[in-house]
Length: 358
Image (cartoon, rainbow, N blue to C red):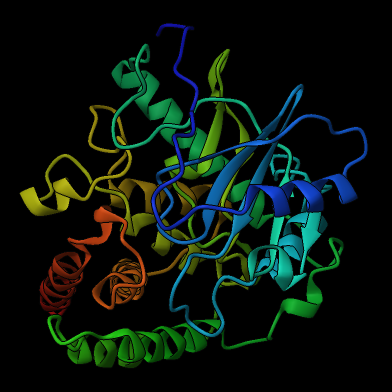
């Protein structure tokens, strides 16, 4: 491995996603003493949901998070909730970014938003960053480092963190199936499938009880963690807490497996890969499941259910984003193919359901 690794960098703000720099500056100066000069605002290009910007002053940098432009699901993109969770969790899980200020004045950007301190490091995306290479053993170690960080999160005492108020009690798994089914139906466009077979199967296959109750991230993957440039096996930051809540850890694991494209997957699924889980040495989805079970003692015979649930939930997220693109509420070109992806995910779920019944 080369120690000179590429650090994740922002780019010029996309058309249609510009921020009013003067209003951001005025808000920032009211919340953070000692700022001087005019801010430079750039955007991190990878986000498909909440938008993330770099706000740079001379000698100071901040990360700004705001909801996407256009139509949004009613319960989605709650900036206040995201701030509440991350602020409460940080003393117990130090890789959470530190929130600097929360703003709920609609006269600034027309939405709630917050700023946090940056975490400088390496983010592994679809392919390894320039200057980074992995042996088979390195890949396995990096993979288990990621899983260990998820397990560490699941072992946080959410009551001690003051997060009991967001817990809704037993039945998390059932609520997730019902909630994501409702979101899909509301976000469906005329050019995608109805997912009714998949939703019916998930409802009938839902375990009677949650496996456990803990803090769940709900979007845990390589491109949402920050690696120490001096030691890439050390995770120094976990990002994108938009979907975090109190729930079933196996549902969280199923969500992670939805993004886990492995070397023997079909060509279309390979084209969706957002992390290098295809590399020699990376665990397979089944090996990820078995590793988690061995480390936590949580065992379940419902591997197929959680994998199919994760793919279905991913399809709903994809379709909600595609809905905004379909109706011209975002011009981000990376969303143009999301309708085709939603259709593929339905077919993949249907195939896995067929295989599970054999």
